[in-house]
Length: 105
Image (cartoon, rainbow, N blue to C red; front, side):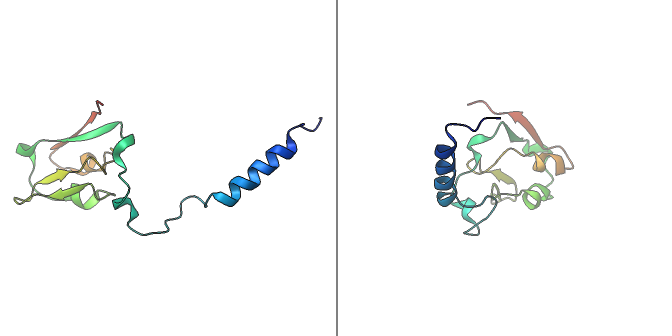
């Protein structure tokens, strides 16, 4: 097979990129997701039904992001700036007080 006439250009571009890019999956600053709002690419979002909630806090405990906090009465509040729509909260809720619905933007 013939060598690409662009081989030198491709190799140069790869070298430049490798010098500028950091390896993936490395967190240089722990807790930096608080700085970077991560909810913008969400497809589904949790909808909360307060009447069904028994305040077991499983949604709060299992949420992998700082996306759920508790109000003064102990009910969960969803911070959609950080919620990725993973659905773990809805899956863990024993009373089905959280339902995942398609995000409308």
